[in-house]
Structure formats: structure tokens, C-alpha cells
Length: 151
Length: 151
DNA sequence: ATGAGTGCAAATAGTTTGCAAGCTG
DNA sequence: CAGCTTGCAAACTATTTGCACTCAT
Image 1 (spheres, protein in one colour):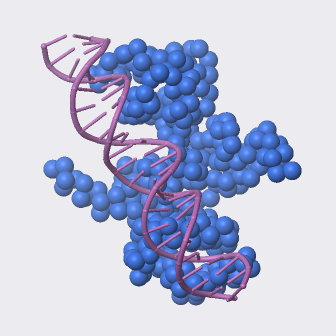
Image 2 (tube, rainbow over the protein chains, first blue to last red; image 1 turned 180 degrees about the vertical axis):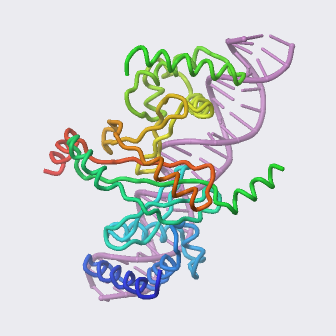
């Protein structure tokens, strides 16, 4: 993720917030910048830790994440255990990931099923269609560690 | 889901349980039968309500679901809100669904991304690969209802 | 000064765990 | 009768909500 793309995203978020009557507070700016430094989806807790948001309430993080989601710039990524990660995205884009179930390292997958999926869903009479697709595994690093643990 | 397939699944579950030292209790039998009557993934609560498991503890439901999962005969289906549904499957099979986010009605999708997904994951050095893919929407019926509600 | 944003505390909800008691094989 | 299974109560965790206070516009 280059500088350009980051600052572009930043500006887009601000623009959309203002359009919706939102404000740009100090906390929100820091939170947004923290989000931009991730090259993978991150948990609310991780996002707070990053940057100097440590003395912010997690509630604030969640509320801002929700706000970003509402303006179509944030994607929730479900994990196998029912919790979720969050990732800033270009407007109304979304991605699929290969996620290590240990360290949460994630890479974007080069795979999109939107067309097939939306087609089938519409054929069944569904509207407001959304979908998730995530791949979980153990990355090479974590596999080594877990092997050690059980040795 | 025909009788044959159901009873076949039933027998397979029992066989695998016994192999693993498990027992066939009354509750477990009822729970299993309840699961078989669903033609879609269902929540733990729904599963308890079905059949006469009302006076069983939800804990028991969860523990049995876990047991069935451990013998490779149950799939967890994540919802958008972080909760999950459960579905009996043939050994180590899994399915993808089109789920109504209101009534939880679900249909199996005719779509499998396993090969593409596993290929990419292995190329990245991952092991123990699993994946989820679920499609959410509003079914025709629920769309009508929600339109009424906001009218 | 209006109302969006924040913090604190407390509530939720789904799910899991500990332990004593009850069954199954 | 050994130990898998169950129930009850309580813990947990991520997330959400209520309300008073603060800050951006």
C-alpha cells in the first residue's frame, strides 16, 4: 500500500464523513491513520494499540469503525471463532483473504466470486446481497511454532 | 433430504461416535434427529426447540454440536452478526449457502471454490486450510415485510 | 450553541468452563 | 463401576447501549 493510495483513502474518508454531517476529531484522525498503517485486517484491540490510541476507549474504536463502515469504506472480516477483523477499503470495494489462524497475518486473495454469487442469489429472489469468503490456515511460521509446542 | 440420506447420516454419526469411544444417549439421539429434520443450517437455540429438547440445557446442545464437529460431520456457518448456525453434513463435506438475514432460510449454493482456494493457500505456504463462503440477502418474503415496516 | 463524538459503566448475547451428579456400556 | 454425558451456575469475550460530558463547526 503506497503513500498515494493511503492519503487518497484518507481524503476519501474525510470527504464522505463531512458529506454525512460527520466531524473530524483528533481521535478519529489518529484512528484512521492507524487503520491505514495496516496491510491486513486487524482487530479492534489491535487497532487501538497501534498509534497512540491506547488511552482511548475501545467503545470509541468500535463506534468509529461502524461509522467508516456506514460510509462504505470499511469491511468486516469474520474469523473462525466468531470475532471479526476490520479493514479499510476503497469505496464499496471488498476483498477476500488468506488468514493465519494463529498470528492473523493475512494476504488478499486473487479471487472474486461476486458475479457467480450475485447471479445465483438474484435467481432465488434475494435482494440486498452480500457475501463473505475467507480462507484460514496456518502460515509457515506458525506451523513451525505449533510443531515445537507439541514435540 | 430424503429418508435414506437421513438415516444414512444417522448411522454414520453413530458409527463414528462409537469408534471414538462415545456413547449414544437419549438426549443425543433426539438432538441428532432434530438436526436431521432441518434442511438448512440452524442455530443452537433453534435446534434445541425442535424436537422435545426444550427442557435440555443449551450447554448440552453446544457440547453435542462440538462432538459432531469433531467427528467431521457438522459444519459451522457464520452469520454476518458473528453468531453461527450448524448443519449436519456427510463426512468431511461442506457446503455454501444463500441465507436470508431475516428469517435464516437458507439454500445450498451450487458453487465450490475449494480448488482455487486451496491452490492459492498452498502456494503461500499455508497448511491446515479451511474456508468459508456464505451469501446473505433478504429473501422475497422478508423483503416484503421490511418494506411494510418502513412504510 | 447545537449536536456530533467520547468515556465510563453496565448490559447483551452467544458460547464456554467447572464441578457434582446421572447414565451408558 | 469407569468414565462419558448432563445440568446448573458462573465465567468469558467481543461487542453494544445509556447517559452525561466535551468538543468541533
